Image: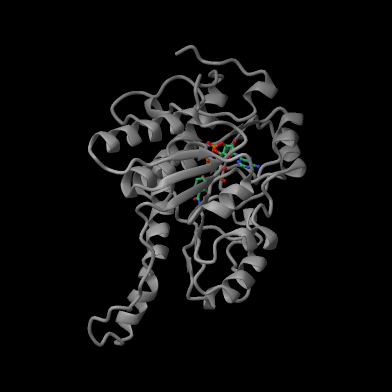
Length: 323
Ligand SMILES: NC(=O)c1ccc[n+]([C@@H]2O[C@H](COP(=O)([O-])OP(=O)(O)OC[C@H]3O[C@@H](n4cnc5c(N)ncnc54)[C@H](O)[C@@H]3O)[C@@H](O)[C@H]2O)c1
Ligand SMILES: O=C(O)[C@H](O)CO
Protein backbone atom coordinates (compact mmCIF):
# COMPACT_ATOMS: atom_id res chain seq x y z
CA UNK A 1 0.00 0.00 0.00
CA UNK A 2 1.46 3.37 -1.05
CA UNK A 3 0.10 6.90 -0.60
CA UNK A 4 -0.31 10.01 -2.69
CA UNK A 5 -1.40 12.95 -0.56
CA UNK A 6 -2.34 16.62 -0.54
CA UNK A 7 -0.78 19.29 1.65
CA UNK A 8 -4.09 19.67 3.50
CA UNK A 9 -3.47 16.37 5.30
CA UNK A 10 -1.09 16.11 8.24
CA UNK A 11 1.04 12.98 8.37
CA UNK A 12 2.76 12.00 11.59
CA UNK A 13 3.67 9.07 13.83
CA UNK A 14 0.22 7.45 13.85
CA UNK A 15 -0.32 7.41 10.09
CA UNK A 16 3.22 6.38 9.19
CA UNK A 17 3.04 3.59 11.73
CA UNK A 18 -0.28 2.42 10.20
CA UNK A 19 1.11 2.71 6.67
CA UNK A 20 4.17 0.73 7.63
CA UNK A 21 2.07 -1.99 9.32
CA UNK A 22 0.08 -2.30 6.10
CA UNK A 23 3.35 -2.86 4.20
CA UNK A 24 3.61 0.68 2.79
CA UNK A 25 7.06 1.96 1.87
CA UNK A 26 6.31 5.17 -0.02
CA UNK A 27 4.30 8.34 0.37
CA UNK A 28 4.24 11.46 -1.79
CA UNK A 29 2.85 14.91 -1.25
CA UNK A 30 1.41 16.49 -4.37
CA UNK A 31 3.23 19.71 -3.38
CA UNK A 32 6.78 20.98 -3.04
CA UNK A 33 6.24 22.14 0.57
CA UNK A 34 6.07 19.25 3.05
CA UNK A 35 5.63 21.02 6.37
CA UNK A 36 2.50 18.84 6.80
CA UNK A 37 4.74 15.76 7.04
CA UNK A 38 6.69 14.63 10.10
CA UNK A 39 9.74 13.38 8.20
CA UNK A 40 11.36 12.01 11.39
CA UNK A 41 8.32 9.77 11.88
CA UNK A 42 8.54 8.63 8.24
CA UNK A 43 12.25 7.85 8.76
CA UNK A 44 11.42 5.82 11.86
CA UNK A 45 9.13 3.57 9.81
CA UNK A 46 11.37 3.51 6.74
CA UNK A 47 8.81 5.30 4.56
CA UNK A 48 10.14 7.35 1.61
CA UNK A 49 8.58 10.85 1.43
CA UNK A 50 8.23 12.38 -2.03
CA UNK A 51 7.48 15.97 -3.07
CA UNK A 52 7.18 17.85 -6.37
CA UNK A 53 9.87 20.55 -6.73
CA UNK A 54 10.74 22.56 -9.82
CA UNK A 55 7.50 22.04 -11.71
CA UNK A 56 5.73 24.85 -9.84
CA UNK A 57 8.54 27.40 -9.57
CA UNK A 58 7.54 29.75 -12.38
CA UNK A 59 3.78 29.32 -11.91
CA UNK A 60 4.01 30.22 -8.22
CA UNK A 61 6.37 33.14 -8.87
CA UNK A 62 3.97 34.43 -11.54
CA UNK A 63 1.09 34.45 -9.03
CA UNK A 64 3.27 36.35 -6.56
CA UNK A 65 4.04 38.85 -9.34
CA UNK A 66 0.31 39.06 -10.19
CA UNK A 67 -0.58 39.81 -6.57
CA UNK A 68 2.18 42.42 -6.46
CA UNK A 69 0.80 44.22 -9.50
CA UNK A 70 -2.80 43.89 -8.34
CA UNK A 71 -1.90 45.39 -4.95
CA UNK A 72 0.36 48.10 -6.37
CA UNK A 73 -2.28 49.26 -8.86
CA UNK A 74 -5.32 48.54 -6.68
CA UNK A 75 -6.89 46.40 -9.37
CA UNK A 76 -9.41 44.56 -7.19
CA UNK A 77 -10.73 47.75 -5.61
CA UNK A 78 -10.98 49.42 -9.01
CA UNK A 79 -12.79 46.42 -10.49
CA UNK A 80 -15.34 46.45 -7.64
CA UNK A 81 -15.83 50.20 -8.08
CA UNK A 82 -16.46 49.78 -11.80
CA UNK A 83 -18.94 46.90 -11.36
CA UNK A 84 -20.79 48.87 -8.69
CA UNK A 85 -21.53 51.53 -11.34
CA UNK A 86 -19.57 54.19 -9.44
CA UNK A 87 -17.36 55.33 -12.32
CA UNK A 88 -18.28 58.89 -13.25
CA UNK A 89 -15.42 59.79 -15.57
CA UNK A 90 -11.61 60.18 -15.46
CA UNK A 91 -10.21 61.88 -12.37
CA UNK A 92 -6.54 62.63 -11.59
CA UNK A 93 -6.66 60.98 -8.15
CA UNK A 94 -8.82 57.93 -8.94
CA UNK A 95 -7.14 54.73 -7.61
CA UNK A 96 -3.66 56.16 -7.59
CA UNK A 97 -1.21 53.38 -6.78
CA UNK A 98 2.54 52.68 -6.69
CA UNK A 99 5.02 52.76 -9.58
CA UNK A 100 7.34 49.75 -9.33
CA UNK A 101 10.15 50.97 -11.60
CA UNK A 102 13.15 52.13 -9.59
CA UNK A 103 11.66 50.91 -6.28
CA UNK A 104 13.15 48.11 -4.19
CA UNK A 105 11.78 44.59 -4.14
CA UNK A 106 12.61 42.54 -1.04
CA UNK A 107 12.62 38.76 -1.18
CA UNK A 108 12.68 36.64 1.96
CA UNK A 109 13.67 33.08 1.08
CA UNK A 110 15.52 33.28 -2.24
CA UNK A 111 15.28 29.60 -3.15
CA UNK A 112 13.71 28.32 -6.38
CA UNK A 113 10.49 30.36 -6.22
CA UNK A 114 11.90 33.43 -4.45
CA UNK A 115 14.67 33.70 -7.04
CA UNK A 116 12.26 33.28 -9.96
CA UNK A 117 10.04 36.01 -8.50
CA UNK A 118 13.04 38.29 -7.92
CA UNK A 119 14.11 37.89 -11.54
CA UNK A 120 10.61 38.70 -12.80
CA UNK A 121 10.42 41.88 -10.75
CA UNK A 122 13.97 43.03 -11.48
CA UNK A 123 13.89 42.32 -15.20
CA UNK A 124 10.23 43.09 -15.84
CA UNK A 125 9.95 46.27 -13.81
CA UNK A 126 13.55 47.42 -13.38
CA UNK A 127 13.36 47.17 -9.61
CA UNK A 128 16.38 47.02 -7.29
CA UNK A 129 16.71 43.85 -5.25
CA UNK A 130 17.38 43.20 -1.58
CA UNK A 131 17.10 39.62 -0.35
CA UNK A 132 17.47 37.61 2.81
CA UNK A 133 18.15 33.89 2.93
CA UNK A 134 20.22 31.61 5.10
CA UNK A 135 22.28 30.85 1.99
CA UNK A 136 23.79 33.04 -0.69
CA UNK A 137 21.93 32.96 -4.01
CA UNK A 138 24.90 33.30 -6.35
CA UNK A 139 22.92 32.62 -9.52
CA UNK A 140 20.44 35.34 -8.68
CA UNK A 141 23.20 37.82 -7.87
CA UNK A 142 24.94 37.02 -11.16
CA UNK A 143 21.69 37.51 -13.06
CA UNK A 144 21.04 40.95 -11.57
CA UNK A 145 24.68 42.00 -12.11
CA UNK A 146 24.48 41.00 -15.80
CA UNK A 147 21.13 42.74 -16.24
CA UNK A 148 22.50 45.90 -14.63
CA UNK A 149 25.40 45.84 -17.11
CA UNK A 150 22.94 45.41 -19.99
CA UNK A 151 20.86 48.40 -18.84
CA UNK A 152 23.97 50.54 -18.39
CA UNK A 153 25.23 49.64 -21.87
CA UNK A 154 21.87 50.80 -23.21
CA UNK A 155 22.05 54.14 -21.44
CA UNK A 156 19.52 53.18 -18.75
CA UNK A 157 19.85 53.40 -14.97
CA UNK A 158 21.30 50.06 -13.82
CA UNK A 159 19.44 48.00 -11.21
CA UNK A 160 21.22 47.04 -7.98
CA UNK A 161 21.21 44.05 -5.63
CA UNK A 162 22.08 43.46 -2.00
CA UNK A 163 22.12 40.37 0.19
CA UNK A 164 20.86 41.58 3.56
CA UNK A 165 22.61 40.44 6.71
CA UNK A 166 19.31 40.43 8.60
CA UNK A 167 15.71 40.09 7.64
CA UNK A 168 14.92 43.40 9.32
CA UNK A 169 17.12 45.17 6.78
CA UNK A 170 14.82 43.91 4.03
CA UNK A 171 11.73 44.99 5.93
CA UNK A 172 13.10 48.50 6.46
CA UNK A 173 14.42 49.09 2.95
CA UNK A 174 12.03 47.37 0.58
CA UNK A 175 8.91 48.86 -0.99
CA UNK A 176 7.59 45.42 -1.94
CA UNK A 177 8.30 42.35 0.21
CA UNK A 178 7.54 38.84 -0.98
CA UNK A 179 7.80 35.81 1.31
CA UNK A 180 9.11 32.53 -0.13
CA UNK A 181 10.76 30.51 2.67
CA UNK A 182 9.85 26.99 3.69
CA UNK A 183 7.61 26.78 6.77
CA UNK A 184 9.47 25.37 9.76
CA UNK A 185 10.24 26.37 13.34
CA UNK A 186 12.54 29.18 12.13
CA UNK A 187 9.92 30.79 9.88
CA UNK A 188 6.74 30.38 11.98
CA UNK A 189 5.37 33.94 12.52
CA UNK A 190 8.48 35.34 10.87
CA UNK A 191 6.39 38.41 10.13
CA UNK A 192 4.84 39.48 13.43
CA UNK A 193 3.57 42.71 15.02
CA UNK A 194 7.07 44.06 15.70
CA UNK A 195 8.33 43.30 12.22
CA UNK A 196 5.24 44.75 10.52
CA UNK A 197 5.96 47.98 12.40
CA UNK A 198 9.44 48.08 10.81
CA UNK A 199 8.08 48.12 7.26
CA UNK A 200 7.40 51.29 5.30
CA UNK A 201 3.89 52.68 5.82
CA UNK A 202 3.15 52.28 2.10
CA UNK A 203 4.88 48.93 1.64
CA UNK A 204 3.26 45.95 -0.08
CA UNK A 205 3.59 42.49 1.47
CA UNK A 206 3.02 39.34 -0.59
CA UNK A 207 2.73 35.81 0.78
CA UNK A 208 2.68 32.77 -1.51
CA UNK A 209 4.67 30.54 0.89
CA UNK A 210 2.68 29.24 3.88
CA UNK A 211 0.09 31.06 6.00
CA UNK A 212 1.79 30.65 9.40
CA UNK A 213 4.87 32.53 8.15
CA UNK A 214 2.75 35.62 9.00
CA UNK A 215 0.99 36.25 12.31
CA UNK A 216 -2.32 36.86 10.52
CA UNK A 217 -4.14 38.44 13.48
CA UNK A 218 -1.29 40.97 13.85
CA UNK A 219 -1.48 41.61 10.11
CA UNK A 220 -5.20 42.40 10.30
CA UNK A 221 -4.52 44.98 13.02
CA UNK A 222 -1.64 46.47 11.03
CA UNK A 223 -3.79 46.78 7.90
CA UNK A 224 -6.56 48.47 9.87
CA UNK A 225 -4.20 51.11 11.24
CA UNK A 226 -2.19 51.61 8.05
CA UNK A 227 -4.59 52.02 5.12
CA UNK A 228 -1.75 52.68 2.64
CA UNK A 229 -0.06 49.37 3.55
CA UNK A 230 -1.28 46.61 1.21
CA UNK A 231 -1.06 42.84 1.10
CA UNK A 232 -1.57 40.09 -1.44
CA UNK A 233 -2.19 36.71 0.20
CA UNK A 234 -2.46 33.28 -1.38
CA UNK A 235 -2.08 31.39 1.90
CA UNK A 236 -3.61 31.73 5.36
CA UNK A 237 -2.77 30.67 8.85
CA UNK A 238 -5.73 28.34 9.31
CA UNK A 239 -6.85 27.40 5.84
CA UNK A 240 -9.50 27.46 4.57
CA UNK A 241 -10.39 30.23 7.05
CA UNK A 242 -9.24 33.82 7.27
CA UNK A 243 -8.67 35.61 10.56
CA UNK A 244 -11.62 37.83 11.57
CA UNK A 245 -11.57 41.21 9.87
CA UNK A 246 -9.32 40.31 6.94
CA UNK A 247 -12.14 39.85 4.43
CA UNK A 248 -13.49 43.35 5.11
CA UNK A 249 -10.21 45.16 4.44
CA UNK A 250 -9.86 47.00 1.13
CA UNK A 251 -6.06 47.01 1.41
CA UNK A 252 -5.91 43.20 1.30
CA UNK A 253 -6.17 41.02 -1.80
CA UNK A 254 -6.94 37.41 -0.96
CA UNK A 255 -6.96 34.35 -3.23
CA UNK A 256 -7.52 30.68 -2.28
CA UNK A 257 -4.06 29.02 -2.39
CA UNK A 258 -3.92 29.00 -6.19
CA UNK A 259 -0.27 29.94 -6.72
CA UNK A 260 0.56 26.64 -8.43
CA UNK A 261 -2.73 26.48 -10.32
CA UNK A 262 -1.69 26.41 -13.97
CA UNK A 263 -2.68 23.37 -16.03
CA UNK A 264 0.92 22.45 -16.90
CA UNK A 265 2.04 22.69 -13.30
CA UNK A 266 -0.85 20.80 -11.74
CA UNK A 267 -0.42 17.98 -14.28
CA UNK A 268 3.31 18.01 -13.60
CA UNK A 269 2.77 17.86 -9.84
CA UNK A 270 0.45 14.86 -10.20
CA UNK A 271 2.95 13.15 -12.51
CA UNK A 272 5.91 13.68 -10.18
CA UNK A 273 3.96 12.59 -7.10
CA UNK A 274 2.77 9.42 -8.86
CA UNK A 275 6.27 8.64 -10.19
CA UNK A 276 7.73 9.07 -6.70
CA UNK A 277 5.60 6.27 -5.29
CA UNK A 278 5.68 4.13 -8.41
CA UNK A 279 9.47 4.38 -8.56
CA UNK A 280 9.77 3.29 -4.93
CA UNK A 281 7.40 0.35 -5.48
CA UNK A 282 9.50 -0.74 -8.45
CA UNK A 283 12.71 -0.40 -6.43
CA UNK A 284 14.12 2.43 -8.58
CA UNK A 285 16.88 4.71 -7.26
CA UNK A 286 16.33 8.39 -6.50
CA UNK A 287 16.87 10.94 -9.30
CA UNK A 288 20.26 12.67 -9.07
CA UNK A 289 18.91 16.24 -9.00
CA UNK A 290 15.42 17.05 -7.72
CA UNK A 291 15.67 20.48 -9.35
CA UNK A 292 16.03 18.96 -12.83
CA UNK A 293 12.78 17.07 -13.21
CA UNK A 294 12.02 17.88 -16.88
CA UNK A 295 12.78 14.32 -18.15
CA UNK A 296 9.84 13.08 -16.04
CA UNK A 297 7.44 15.50 -17.74
CA UNK A 298 8.09 14.64 -21.38
CA UNK A 299 4.84 13.23 -22.79
CA UNK A 300 6.64 11.70 -25.76
CA UNK A 301 9.19 9.61 -23.91
CA UNK A 302 9.15 7.09 -21.08
CA UNK A 303 10.12 8.69 -17.77
CA UNK A 304 13.52 7.76 -16.32
CA UNK A 305 13.58 4.66 -14.08
CA UNK A 306 13.95 6.75 -10.91
CA UNK A 307 11.95 8.47 -8.16
CA UNK A 308 11.99 12.19 -9.09
CA UNK A 309 12.24 13.66 -5.57
CA UNK A 310 12.47 11.86 -2.21
CA UNK A 311 13.19 14.31 0.60
CA UNK A 312 14.46 11.72 3.09
CA UNK A 313 16.54 9.72 0.58
CA UNK A 314 19.76 10.37 2.54
CA UNK A 315 18.24 9.46 5.92
CA UNK A 316 16.93 6.19 4.47
CA UNK A 317 20.19 5.49 2.64
CA UNK A 318 18.43 5.17 -0.74
CA UNK A 319 20.68 4.84 -3.81
CA UNK A 320 20.93 7.67 -6.34
CA UNK A 321 20.34 7.31 -10.07
CA UNK A 322 23.40 7.93 -12.25
CA UNK A 323 21.14 8.62 -15.29
N1 LIG B 1 1.21 29.02 -2.43
C1 LIG B 1 1.51 27.94 -3.10
O1 LIG B 1 0.70 27.33 -3.78
C2 LIG B 1 2.91 27.41 -3.06
C3 LIG B 1 3.43 26.79 -4.20
C4 LIG B 1 4.72 26.31 -4.15
C5 LIG B 1 5.48 26.44 -3.00
N2 LIG B 1 4.94 27.05 -1.91
C6 LIG B 1 5.75 27.22 -0.69
O2 LIG B 1 6.96 27.87 -1.07
C7 LIG B 1 8.03 27.26 -0.36
C8 LIG B 1 9.32 27.49 -1.10
O3 LIG B 1 9.38 26.67 -2.25
P1 LIG B 1 10.74 26.57 -3.10
O4 LIG B 1 10.50 25.55 -4.15
O5 LIG B 1 11.20 27.91 -3.52
O6 LIG B 1 11.71 25.98 -1.99
P2 LIG B 1 13.27 26.19 -1.81
O7 LIG B 1 13.68 25.18 -0.83
O8 LIG B 1 13.94 26.24 -3.14
O9 LIG B 1 13.39 27.66 -1.16
C9 LIG B 1 13.14 27.93 0.18
C10 LIG B 1 14.19 28.93 0.66
O10 LIG B 1 13.86 29.35 1.99
C11 LIG B 1 15.09 29.56 2.65
N3 LIG B 1 14.91 29.61 4.09
C12 LIG B 1 14.73 28.58 4.96
N4 LIG B 1 14.63 29.06 6.21
C13 LIG B 1 14.74 30.40 6.14
C14 LIG B 1 14.71 31.46 7.08
N5 LIG B 1 14.57 31.21 8.39
N6 LIG B 1 14.84 32.72 6.65
C15 LIG B 1 15.00 32.99 5.33
N7 LIG B 1 15.03 32.03 4.37
C16 LIG B 1 14.90 30.77 4.78
C17 LIG B 1 15.96 28.38 2.19
O11 LIG B 1 17.33 28.60 2.44
C18 LIG B 1 15.61 28.32 0.72
O12 LIG B 1 16.49 29.08 -0.08
C19 LIG B 1 7.59 25.79 -0.21
O13 LIG B 1 8.21 25.17 0.88
C20 LIG B 1 6.10 25.91 -0.03
O14 LIG B 1 5.78 25.96 1.34
C21 LIG B 1 3.68 27.53 -1.93
O1 LIG C 1 3.80 23.56 -1.61
C1 LIG C 1 3.12 23.52 -2.64
O2 LIG C 1 3.44 22.84 -3.62
C2 LIG C 1 1.87 24.35 -2.74
O3 LIG C 1 1.45 24.97 -1.62
C3 LIG C 1 0.77 23.73 -3.54
O4 LIG C 1 1.07 23.95 -4.83
